[in-house]
Structure formats: structure tokens, C-alpha cells
Picture 1 (tube, rainbow, N blue to C red):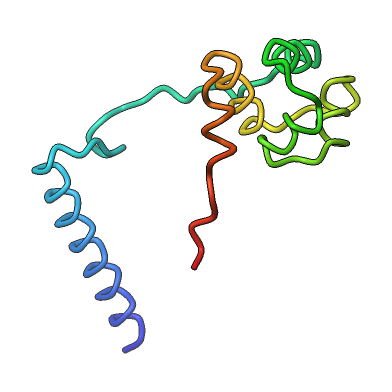
Picture 2 (tube, rainbow, N blue to C red):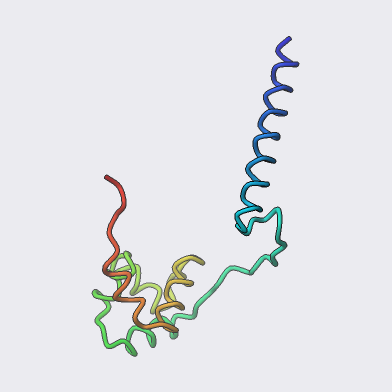
Length: 114
């Protein structure tokens, strides 16, 4: 009996998922079910590029670290090549490099938690 119930639950979940997908398609929402995307390789950034980005913005290591929400020591390690930022941090630094106003926007972000 339990086996049949498990099967029904999965079937129901699949039906709900299908209805949601149809609804999203009608709204024009782009989903992985309706569009194929190429998987992008993780971003990497060189230590020199991190330091040059900070210097180009004319901010101290402490200020840059605070805006990126990392410790000054972490940023120092990245800039000196002792550690590498993860792909998300690399993407953030590259965004700041390409669009300098991003740094102030990062600074203005606040937690959404109530």
C-alpha cells in the first residue's frame, strides 16, 4: 500500500510541476525547460587584476574589502596570490572592474532578513 501512495505523490508532484511550467510559459518566463543555455566555466581572476582594480578605484584595501563583504586579510591574500577568490567573488570583482559604480551599489545593500 505504501508503494502505491509514494507513486501517487510523485505523479501529483509531476502534474503540479507541469502546470507551473505551462503557467510560466504563458507569462513569457524563461526557464531551463524552455531554453537551452551553455554551461559557463567558473570565472577566475588574477591577483594583479584584483589589486589593479582596487587601485583604479582609488580605495584602500580595507574599504574595498568592506564593500565586497570580505575581511581585509582575505583581500590581501587574493591580491598577493596566496589565495584565490571563489567564482562568485571573482564575478563580483570583475563586475566592479567593468562597472565601477557597482562598488557603491554593493556598499548600499542591506540584509533582507527581518
